[in-house]
Image 1 (cartoon, rainbow, N blue to C red):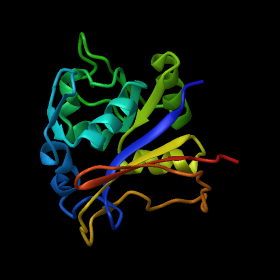
Image 2 (cartoon, helix red, strand yellow):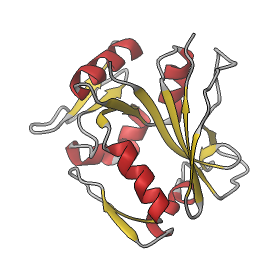
Image 3 (cartoon, one colour):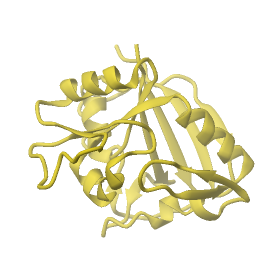
Image 4 (cartoon, helix red, strand yellow):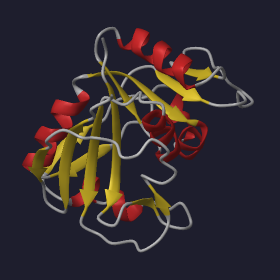
Length: 198
């Protein structure tokens, strides 16, 4: 069965965005922490410039992904990724489908009947590969429901002091984690923890 992997970049003090929803500080390492170029693909491609260790981490992570699951806020901020996410079909957990969607030729799908349905649909679309999960609120909901198999957290070398926390509003704590895989990049430390769902 496909693993569900939470994938987020955050500050050392646990924030994924500043109080104004700005994410530059926690994502800067993607665009200037090294000299290895990585193309993201998708309809709205980007070029990352990262260190060798970070490039190896990103390639290993993204090559195992077959679909993505996120919430409406992340979808809106990302502009719907131009209709096609680089990681494969995208499933958006939402109460309401936005105007103008779904679009012809797009691999973005909207799920209005709950998180279990969203996970099931994303797993089916991933065809045996993992499902990558974006967005603090979506990750929190899935953790609370026991639906996350792994945390892949990129800890940026910055302290934000305030903003949007990745691990706020958890109801099922403590959440037991296995031993991490640790990769030291430039300006970032990559942590991958298996989640021990009981």
